[in-house]
View 1 (tube, rainbow, N blue to C red):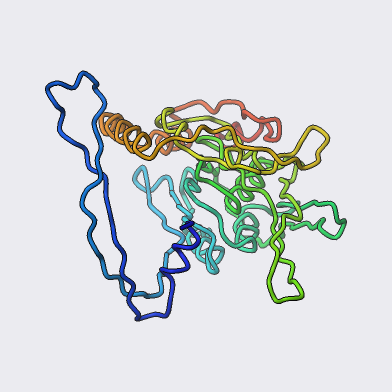
View 2 (tube, rainbow, N blue to C red):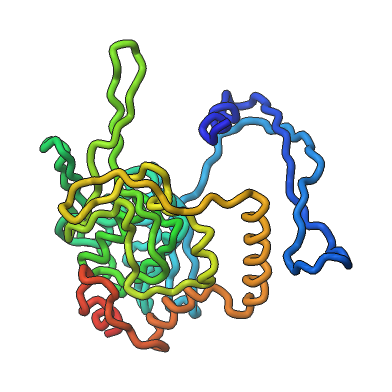
Length: 329
């Protein structure tokens, strides 16, 4: 059963029930005769769970004050129908008055609605290109531009991204970076920058094909490349080996040196499930030992805004060196 098959079976009419069987891994105690330091994993007994279907409502925008209110952190979980409007309320001029800066947290944001990504980027930009698409068919060339709404925040902005930042959140990150409106901190994003179109067939079925790619205002392709932050901060470098990005997927698209899309196979080695469980357990233990460090990516952003750390030069050619000093001033 594929993931989509499972999702299709779980979904249904509100109020109806669905029964699932759950089986979980568990770590065995160390054996005195075992010379290997790695924990042994076995599967526990399966058990049944009854779920009642309902509409799941996720609040996509959450805000939090840091440094006694001097810094506002706003996290966007995904781009839903009201994300743009909710973010507009969260960063209204009166809510940013007197603050040292704003942190827009897009880590582990898988994307969502394109129009909401445009709306979010537009909140920070007075003018200029936000994103455009290009494909073989000239009709696939489309552009989305920002408008001056008169409510764009004037405080310094830092955007947090990581390997789970994908699609619509990469569009926002790339646009703000290219326009030098935000300084990006974290790790390279996922790299989902393709446009799919569903073509209806004569028998009523549909064919989904990739028809275009997304590009940032400076012409950078997002597909399989992702967005590189201006300052790379990885809370646990070991986590990177467990992150699956677009470039790791079989038959994914990449943009070659000529600017044309090319089909490539991911080179990520297939890892047995038990080995993945063991490695994740090891990482959990390592991260638990670092709890005193807290969220190092967020703390780095706070330190930059509070002046406790010097602004480094941006790591990418697309971002101007004025980004950091402007924010610092």
